[in-house]
Image 1: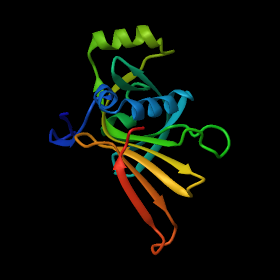
Image 2 (image 1 turned 90 degrees about the vertical axis):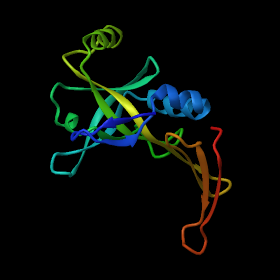
Image 3 (image 1 turned 45 degrees about the horizontal axis):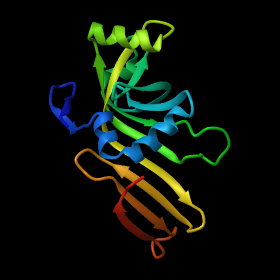
Length: 183
């Protein structure tokens, strides 16, 4: 659970590998992975050099206990390691399986052996940059229609997964309950 260095060399955030998360919270990890594997393309949010946000479509893959992001070579998104990734909600408005988001730091992979193994398995159509994800947060949001509650399952490295149930839209009506998440 080490941090990744920022551009200036400082360690910024505690991160964990996909395998670390999957080992600690297998049911939640399975739910998150299933949501991402339901569709090919997802939405990646990164930070431009001027600090403004940027979104782009991206494919992700889970291999060898890691979450991997691919990119065109020298893409601008590779200049700052911070990102947020939102699973494709799919057709319609029901967001089957819930809204799933991952945040973290993307470490550029320059090891020729790792790149060759990845290319052999995935067979990308062209040259690519590869990033290995260090997780900083995972959140799944669903709606429990019968209970009229929004349910959030969230996790950060070094903490248990938490399930929050929230009811009400006005400050006077909000009721939250917190428990350790099992799924």
